[in-house]
Image (cartoon, rainbow, N blue to C red; front, top):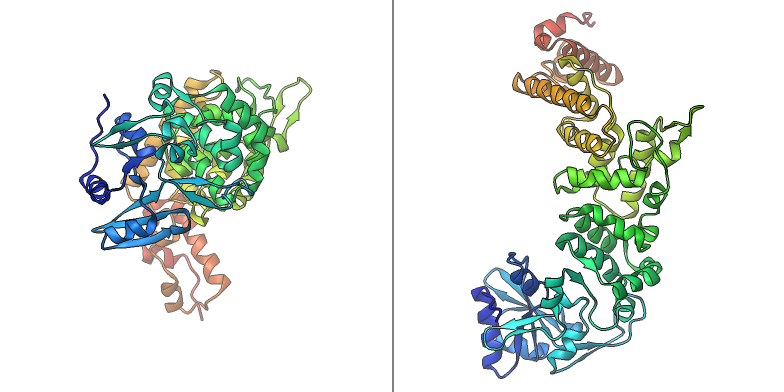
Length: 443
């Protein structure tokens, strides 16, 4: 018998609803995660009580989705969603039911949920309610729709991406009928907002198996949400440095960086410009000169289309632009590279370059990794010695130039950058008196 330790607040809410004569259970992903031994992100409660009946039982509630039966019960500063058992009406937009009907039957509520592993309920009195073999599917490592897969995906097309995302998070395979339904209905993802697609894509990329993005390709999902990636999956690389085509190379890089949104997106997009820049020389060897710049342009377009925030767009774009930057093994070269790329993302380039190398062929791999380690050590020394790397660290400021009579404007900016060039070359020259002595006196 499976026993789940509910948080005290969740148990208190369930107890109060049951004491009033209604049914109540913790339900969904929190039960799945608890069985897996993971700490749930949040706890949802389902009940036979109607929303107005739930509201009478608690001092503070918020009508977060009352038209669909959901109220949020405030317990101190923490909120818990409590939703009435319901049957969804006809779906007309691959997202929202036209109407919902409240029901007193838990089975009817569970049967409308997406996957068997998310269709389990629990309370201390009745124990685990698992009507659709969710525990068995977890033991088998299977993502399977509740009931008819085609019906579930017609109700909400985003569930197809969720199937791949849960597969990637848990390392499960997608059951054959469920996978077949995804392949059939993937085009309906055009009904889903960019924000919801972005959220699922990021969750997939941050999962334990980000390379399961290949399943999204095989089922036709990326053809709808990321067609640029599909082109990469058909772009060969006949080059000693590579052993995969472009798309497979991208997939292999993803697990080599930590589960960080900016880093995983950077790897997803780092070679997205290769199809556009593909050339073949007289020996049949493929080249992709200028692919980083082309990749940045494509990556920015994709991220704007998926409505990523500006900070993410900026950082990922720069990592794509500079992922292949050639840096000489000298402090001077490191300082210039940091200034060129930006102090915020330069350290991330070591992770990006490492992942890129590890997903290439073994040709010169040891030399590449050794060179990368040398660059990292030089960078650490530059940082430890607090070398000037940007205008904000320059010993001379705009105010200093004004004080010697320089007029505000373009000339002042050019002067500061010229002085920075001096300091990037010789960091010991970052002294105000010395730098000002290099300037002609102003009238």
